[in-house]
Length: 395
Image 1 (cartoon, rainbow, N blue to C red):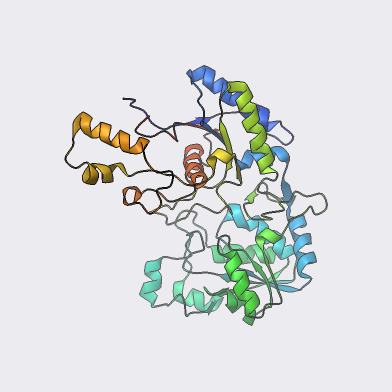
Image 2: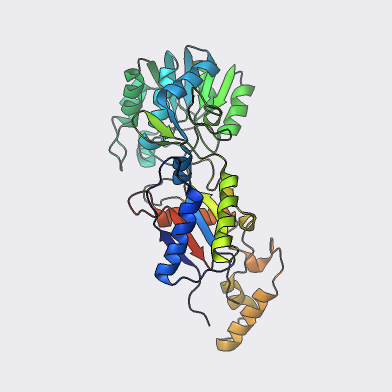
């Protein structure tokens, strides 16, 4: 019996700059890692590349002024509501500066006790202690301070209410803050709304339009085309962006399918094996201590080769061992389980023997694995090689 299943390796490469031939860099790095570590490549190995270096290689950056110009042109209004932003210096603060430079006043509506991805203004326990109903309460800044005080984020030490309001004023823009978990609340202040939530944006946009909003745009509708030569993303706009400098953001990469197809072809040529390729961003998982849901990107994987489409089709081994083959043990049990895997249906949906397996997209699972492997700091491994992911106990 083989004793090793899935193997995941973070692969180092040179620091990527705008204009670099990333397909060649990734392929050369994988081949070099194979030689250095005596890696034998196989069909259905996976090579995944973080979205950050894809966007960097294509130079997909935009300035605060480009964001401001697009916001100003698309709203043509003095006052807008900025609704449900996440609490992040890296992900949102630079975008907020651009928004503030594009209008005269922002009504900033924050959800509470946390943002959409789990960054807390204050704890659930404090909210319960104060007897505040999050679904039937609207507060202004004064009421918020009287109730919850000057709390800071437990990881960053930042008071995001102060941080965001100070940032807006520094841009020469007036700001008013309200706290409500209903998007429609903003319509009591302005009919022009910029929705900044990620995964609930489409539903909230429908609700706002139905409630009488005059203009509603989401972050994926800002910088969908170039502004004065800036980068852009026709599908996701500002969603998926990260702080690059104090004046620029790196946007989510464009032309992603073209890149993964080219990478796949180059890897096949270099290794002789049918290696799958994908781009990954944030993983889709939640930190049980910090309560933060990692997925601040609009998707885990913006592009991947066809062999990575779909969901797992797996049997639950412990179900087979405890039920179908409860009377077997040792080699006899092993043989029976292997035989079941070999003869399993192509679609196990709804079958009891698959109950408890993970019903998620393969790219979400693999992308999360890659994000945990490469990390977000100084590991220096923006490429991930995965082998044996599609193996099972019968192989």
